[in-house]
Length: 152
Image (cartoon, rainbow, N blue to C red; front, side, top):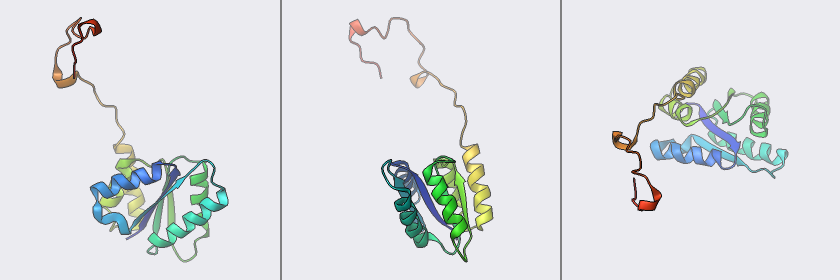
């Protein structure tokens, strides 16, 4: 079972971990998060990420980052290329559907987990049709602020 590490700009990583543990309370042992504040030195980000990766690696790990080319992703790429004796993969563009899909299929191989995560990411992004609240018909003038009617 590969471990999961989220490295992202603060506070995204810890927020995603909170969403994950809300839905999958048992995932705490296999998931770590590193929030990267704007003023954190790259060397400190890498040292902390290496420590967290050591906690979740079993011996494989999947690292999620928020933006390709930014510090979290660059650090993740360095970690993935420098870890000996373990397979580590990196996916940039983390979102909730990707994370949940990974947790649902956490018992699969690392390569299968990467495929599942990518599918979850793309299938979880869609345009959603909008409708009026409670499908109520629009009534011109019904939302007039001078009438002090509160609409919910």
